[in-house]
Amino acid sequence: MPIASVNPATGETVQTFEPLDAAGIERRLARAEAAFHSYRGTPFAARAELMRRAADLLDRELEAVARTMTEEMGKPLAASRAEVAKCGKAMRWYADHAEELLADEHPAPADVADSGASRAFVRYRPLGPVLAVMPWNFPLWQVLRFAAPALMAGNVGLLKHASNVPRTALAIEELFQRAGFPEGCFQTLLIGSGAVEGVIRDRRVVAVTLTGSEPAGRAVAATAADEVKKAVLELGGSDPFVVLPSADLDAAVRTAVRARVQNNGQSCIAAKRFIVHTDVYDRFTAAFTAAMGALKVGDPMDESTDVGPLASRQGRDDLEELVEDARVHGARVECGGGRPEGWDTGWFYEPTVLTGITPAMRIHLEETFGPVATVYRVADLDEAVAVANDTPFGLSANVWTTDEAERERFVRDIQAGGVFFNGMTASHPALPFGGVKRSGFGRELSGHGIREFCNITTVWIG
Ligand SMILES: O=CCCC(=O)O
Image 1 (cartoon, helix red, strand yellow):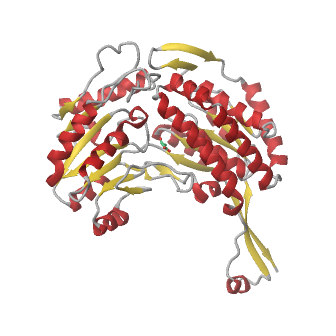
Image 2: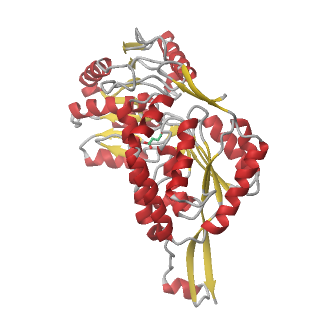
Image 3: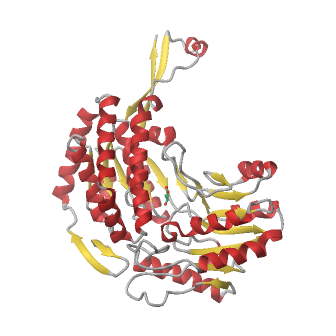
């Protein structure tokens, strides 16, 4: 795919970029290595000051950055603004907490003595230049939630962003430069995916983190494994949204709609499979279908738009195929199910609700990356848990119930990296984020995220 900023609402190419040649990549890798040698020794307070300055700049330029994102990948402008604000918050959170999260750890005195030491402790030291391979769906947030902890830990970052968000990628590099981070601390590599393997194999790159598709994750992790380098993967998700009889049904319906269509339906943690107890199935499905069908699809720059275009023609075509396959195999289309009238220029798709899903349909196991919901009827709690877990993915889950025993059942048995009760899954700087099964491994955010790219060093003194 060429590196190009194409407006998904119009199909118009806004700007194209020449990928870096071998010499350009080499210059940036050399700069990253040199930067790490000095930056790793900077005190936390100095890093925090730079990070806060970058967050202040971002706050001041929120509107411009938000408009660039909407123009590059089509999310409604209000969602872009919220994303920029969330990044500033996470940057400040790590500026405030990194030192305490990475403080030396002291084992119990009896254990120290038992190891034969007079003193022993654990120190979290930075690793070096880390490559981040990032997706277009949250073009700022996905990068900043890597960059803020990585830079606060004393690492330096190299970004290979998705090829359709180059303007956002360059804006992030400039942001850190203008905040005063030393040259080479954070660099964008405008490269195609074919050049990623060489960068991972370069001796100066010590680790890689990827958020994106399963095939991309598999390729990146395989190269990293071959080089014996650390990898963190945050891949797809097909999160269940379980509604049990004790749920506040109005609130569940309102949240279900937001959880499905956030980011035009293109979020790994969007709720995708709605699993509803038979006692409330009819009421939930009717209200959910009505609310999905009433959403306004249109220009993402228009403040009244609920759902903008999908980010690419390929994404829209893939979604269309999944729905078609379900329809052919007997699914009922409760609302939507096609391209909206009057929006022929961009890559729009109607908010869609499908029922009557069976395992014969591709959509039963594949991720729907767009505003398409599947609804399942279940007879009891056991079946709800079984259907929720009947997916190759394991990112997060949403469960609506006020019954403590039902909650405990999900905490015990759900195969996912998170479970959110009576609400929708959302990332937060203080809470770990990541999955199990084909959703990947490792964690981002919180103390777990910042420690992923540290050399956990044992210090033993005899
Ligand atoms: O696409 C997944 C990330 C979404 C988020 O962190 O809010």
